[in-house]
Amino acid sequence: MTDIKLLAKRETQNAVYYDSVNGVAGTAWPIGTAFLPVNNEANLRTIVAARNASYIFISGALSITSSWPTNRDYVFEGKNHKNDNITSQVTIVGPGLDVTRITFRNVYFETTSSMLIGLGPILEECIIGNVGISASIDSDIRYAKNCLIQGQVFLNIGFLENCVFTDEYNYSPQLSVQGGNFVVINCRIGGGRGNDNGQLIIGDNVNGILDLYGGQIVFLATCTGTVTVSGTCDILDQSAGGVTIIDRRNRPRAEVAVNITAILAAETNVFNLAVATIHYNVDTLILKSADPGANNVTVRLYQLVNGASTLIKTFTITTVNFATYFTLMDMFGVPHLAGDNIRITVQATAGGPYVVVGSYCFRSA
Image (cartoon, rainbow, N blue to C red; front, top):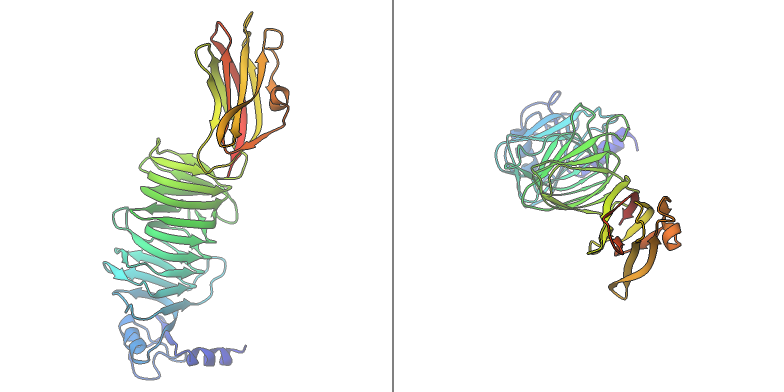
């Protein structure tokens, strides 16, 4: 489609044009058209209302200083951006603005000294800077799709899809959630220039879903709440139990070291994978016991049978074989384990305690 046809199509959509650099002030026709854009928000509002317009094409910087009417939907579309070179910027300024009925597309979007009220805007193919001011002055993003997020985003509620969190500009993006819920689906953490070494810093109260690929999620010491994590990202939890993390990443974990003692009085867990609604795959297990002398160390495998944890197999470590590093295949005749409830224990038949060391790796989904 030629430029003339494209302009004609946009005019038939009753679009209004804004250009902070090359536009002019005023509200009389043809100000606000593609050939003579308006250059300030006050006149823009007047023109949009007079012409019953819903599309606003912007170039340059636009500051929104008061709420827009919520009786209709608007689209603010900027010039296309490539390689982070964006030429249109929208800044929300002023306290407690409602931009619920606005979709922002192809713009650099941020808020300054304000919080958004209502359900929040829709953001498509935008670069997102700082949104909200702090954990106590937060905002809503109703929906963000195909966006690059490089700032500190303080959310009350939000849905983010196919976005990239990047620390391209020498700081880690931050996502904080207060009092609401959020969903982050099929998003990536990038360290800038396409690498996967970035961090997403999660602060304050968090409740929601994080489906993230690449990089690392860091839960700060201030975090509380419950979050489900899926994807391939790494997790660094500094919350000391403040956050309940439901880990559904279907990926091999770092090796978990085993250093326990087998005693007579009770079974000691090597591991007990039994969080409700989570399915587990144990990829590897290696165990070695100290010499039990005249006694034995019994290794037991429990799995669900008809909804109940049931003893499936046992293996005995004796003074004859204790020097061996035993694998799953050695002990239970299988290369790996899968199920919703998997438990392996050790117990001395007498005497003890006997030190049992080793490692295991597992995945969950």
